[in-house]
Amino acid sequence: MSVAEDSGMYAEAVAMLEREAASQLMRHLQEKGTLRQVSVDIRLQMDKRSMTVNFGPGYLPGPEGSYDELFLHPMASSLRFFAEKSGLEVNDINFLFEGKPLEDYYPDDLAVPVQSSRKKTSSSALVSSSHGYISLHPSREWKFQRPAPLGLQEDTLSPVYGDELQALIEQRSGLTVHRARSRSTDLHPESNMPWEHMSSRYHLKALFPERTDMWNEFPNSTDSAREKDEDIRARPNYANHLGVDVMISLHSNGHDSADVRGAEVYYHREKPQDKPLADSIICSMRELIRAQPGYGAFPIRESSNQGAHGENRIGKMPSVIVETAYHSNPDDAAALQDPIFRSASMKGVEKGYRLWATGKTCEPLALQPLPDIEVPLQSSRDVNVTFAGNPQFPVVLEVGVADCDRPGFCTPLKTTFNDPSAPVMFGASCSSTRPGTVRWKVLIRDADGVAAAPVEFTQACVRS
Image (cartoon, rainbow, N blue to C red):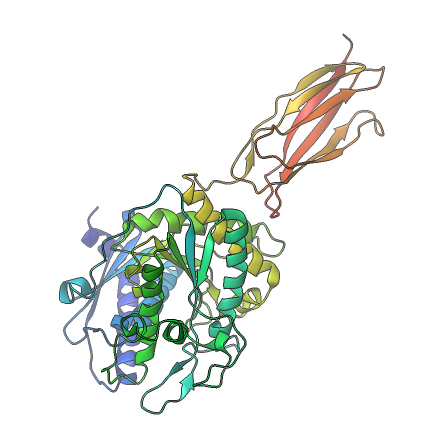
């Protein structure tokens, strides 16, 4: 089915989405002092779960404002949200400007740099926890980059998530982790604010004062908030300088609508080689977060999203953006402040990276069926437990009683296994002198709280 045919089938939903996109764009342009109506045409391709948004004449974002990514990505979230409300499953959203992508207008600046060759063994990572204070021009007023509609400030929240992820990557993946922002509580001399609240731009300015190409790319810009654009570029510039093997950017998301929520992971549409990493991370986040009490239904996308973030594009290494949750949604905001959610989400990010780096596939933890067995009286028999998935060791095996024909004679057990290379097994014994049967319920749970659905089998104690 063609794109046009798809759009024709969903004409009413498409018309609603076009009105929404046009309305958002008009408000955006008005905020910038421009009164202009721009046509919007939307096409759907449901077999690819994609949407193409084509803006007519009158709107072409440029280098100032990082090509409006702080407007276009929230718009994509809106359109995805409203499409799904209409029963349309949309994952990727592409923006065109008079029929062409931005790369056609700015081929030099938006070109993806030559990617570094992947090493057989990775040794280092950059964790970028955004955003932090910038200085507005020409007033020199210091301001956080992100709004805090529910009082939750992403600029100070994300570094705490970065601390969690750094420790996990160092402990479990064995990498050296660099940070794009300072974690010092000393005062930054220019702003008199704690260094840990400053943007990457200022951290890198202090580390490399002579490398203005790294942190001061727009010295002649007249945009009051030009340091936002410089900060976006400073993070991957630093990753390139370090030559790290992977860059993971941590954010919480925000939206004008409090209804939009959930976890998302983005890769750059011109770096499709990064999609497997992004997919592995979102898959592992889904496994780890939903394993925690109270988070079994937390909204997490089924696959990663393509985007056009400068933070991903500029890095010469695999680079992804993790939007852990929406700080503009009350339920998500509560989760973001919960240490259990923080730990589970960052364990998911680290696990997703580690599986991708070692060539493993993210898959659910699942026990293989166990056949019914017979055990002679006064003897025992080993039962091997096999499973799919990638549990974090140590794992606990629980063998409970589902049904016993002789109550009091069937004893449950719990065993811990520390060695991932050793078989997981237990002994099924029949110490009685009388025949009988027991229905066992077997469960496996890993160190991060991920549990496989239990399986049952019957053990019959029989005479030889």
